[in-house]
Structure formats: structure tokens, C-alpha cells
Amino acid sequence: METIARGVDARVRGDRIVEAWFGGYREPFKTPAARQAKGLEGRVILGVHRTGKHIVWELSTAEVQALAGGSGQPDAQWIVHLGMTGRLLVTTPDGPVADHTHARLRLKSGREIRFVDPRRFGRLELRDLRRTAGFAGAGKEPLTVGAEEFAGVFRGRKLAIKAALLNQSLLTGVGNIYADESLFRARIRPRRRAGRLTRAELERLRLGLREVLEHAIRLGGSSVSDYVDADGVRGFFQLEHCVYLRTGLPCRQCATPIRRILVAGRGTHFCPQCQR
Ligand SMILES: [Zn+2]
Image 1 (tube, helix red, strand yellow):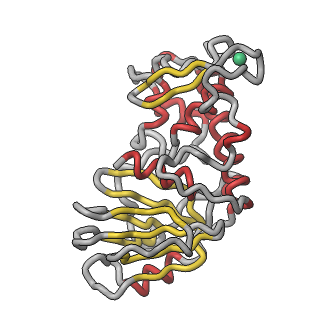
Image 2 (cartoon, protein in one colour; image 1 turned 60 degrees about the vertical axis):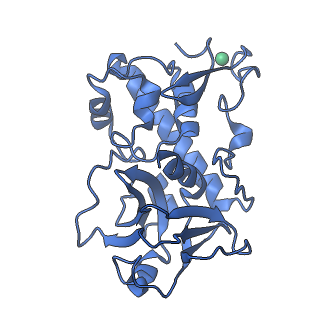
């Protein structure tokens, strides 16, 4: 499930929902289909993360520019409970439509999100956060979290900083790419214990993470190239990665070969010279 949320997040973060279509069955909709469509259309996707058995889309009516400026708080959530047989697909509008497709969201980038569920055990819900409480359990929003709050997230944590960055109950929507790239910018080794990082290191990390995410959002908003591969790793800013998927290639700062290790089961890339 985590993989699904991350894969989707990497491809839709910063995108805008242009049009929403829902099928005729009643079961999959906790919020009436017409109201979901009306609430989804026009909203910007701030991030996608997993909370329990749900994939939660944080949405905002604010412009992406406002988000990059730091004022982008979600004002709605689209909550997808996959049930036993539900699937979320990222595709293009002309891709063949599978049987049992109950929802299609067309995005500004040209991508299309589809919810497919043969047995209709899954559920779709739209929450207006101006009127209803948000789905519990979500972590801090990395684009807007302040220095004090960010440091507090990692205080006393014994797990590796890379694992902590990926933990959606601490920070929402930090995918594998963003974690590796932000650790490089902050010059921190991925296996360092989160709770042992100095305040200065944490601040470098907070700013590095924001920089990486804002960059991805900017490029995502203007990119028309699509990458519908299931792995969800071929992102729009692949060409500019410093470490991610650059194993053995020279570091862009110091020419030392980039190394790959596993942290929390995830491929992790870093420069052994620049990161300490
Ligand atoms: Zn280096």
C-alpha cells in the first residue's frame, strides 16, 4: 500500500485536477459522486500519502505558486480506501479503460488517475476540511513546517533519518527521491540516527527538502512528458538528480562515485564524501 501511495505521489504532486468523472454504481461513493466531482475539479494536489488502509490526497484550491510561497494548506482531502480489490492507476486519457473503472480524474499535466475495483469493496470520499476534520494520522506538511516543529518531529527517534523522512506519520508525502536528494543537499548520511542530528543539520535538511519539493512541483506543473511506468521512480526531474539512481556515477560536487545502500528496505543513494 505504501508503495502505491508513493508511486502516485511522485507522479501527481503539484498537478491540478481538471475534470472528474464517476461511474453509475452507488457503492464506491461515501460522498455522492456529483459532490465529489464538484469538489475535486480545479483543485491542486499538494501530496498523496497513506494513512492506515487509506490513500489520502491532500488538496487545495490555492495556486501552486502560493503553495511554494509557503501558504498552501490543504482545504480538502480525497480519501481512497482500496478495499480488497481496488486499484489506483496513473495513465493517460487515451489508455484503454479497464472494466470496473468507477472514477477517472483528468489532470492538467495530461495524466489521468483511475480507480478500478471489480468487487466494489473500495470507497471514495471527499472531505471539505473547512467544514469537517481531516483524516487523522497525517504527519507534518514538509513545505510549510517551521524549524522548531521540524526538529520536534525527529527528537528522540532512534531510526535512521532516511527511514524517518519516509515515515508518513511524521512528514506527509516525502517519497524516496525527495528523501535522498534532500539528505544530499543537507550533507547528511542516510543511516544517521534521526534523534542524533544537530539542530543545524536538521535545519539544512528542512530547507533542502523544501527546495527539492518546490523544484519538483515547479517542473511538474509545466511538464508534458508522461511516465506511466509502474515503478513510480522516473520523475520529471530525473535529469537533475544529484544522487538518486546515480549509483557509481561521479558526485556533482566532488566527483566521488555515488553509493547505493538499503535503508528501511528502500534503495538509498548518497555521496560518501559530501555526506557525513
Ligand atoms: Zn560528493
